[in-house]
Length: 91
Image (tube, rainbow, N blue to C red):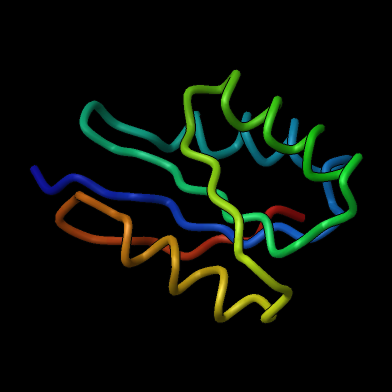
């Protein structure tokens, strides 16, 4: 079976992350991964998001400056190490 990385951009939406994490975990199979990229959220939002994402066992990356969802998603895709990627939203 193919392995899959769920890819998501995040910007000041940590309130949605618990439901996002539950939803993605339901869909994940062994060998799958999830990368969430924070696109320069406020410091408090980024800290909350990192904690939630890493506690879930997902990878958390950050962009050096706000570039919009496509920049954040592209960073995640470049870091994916699975057979395929699936782009999802955190909200």
